[in-house]
Length: 282
Image (cartoon, rainbow, N blue to C red):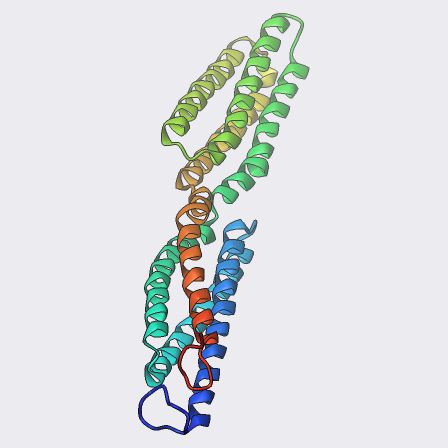
């Protein structure tokens, strides 16, 4: 008896087997490309430079394009073979993959901005330098002072330096936190410390000798530079793109990824059970 054909059109046995083999190969490639896309997107989220984030995001996009191409090839192939169960599984994967893509675009758009990393670099780079310049300028004020009112000058300098350090201490948790209320509270504390630092500088001008004026001017300029950088740090931190992209990856995306993988695995098993005649083997 001749081989029964899956499409019901009396096609040659070899043609059916070739199509089945092709369907299996495409399904295997779908699994490979989906894993590649998910891994590359995860690396984009975890990358510590803009260049790396963009590179991994591009790799994820290339894998996604390959998935789309495989879907366009596999869907009509399953229809030709008459595999309704497999076509249903592919449709389920395709629907979930569309959800995956929409979420992944959001995640990658956030990841490549790297605002938390940029805020961190500002805090530990230019921000640290400006704070140290402020401290060094006030040290020069101390060195140029006389014994008169030296204790007062020392106290004001210590207070001014301490308040700037208080702002620095708050920058790291601000960058790491995702809670708007917590960030607002930290910003309020920063503003209080800034006012105290400026009050200390004004008080120093009243008690420090006139020879200290250039150093006090340098301290004021360093404080202004530091506070400008702090404003940039806060703005970047408020965007929270690294924190948000990571949260989405660990929560919503993980659920959708598992669902996609389950459909692909089920499809591969279903095609693997298709026997010589194109019907399921028992």
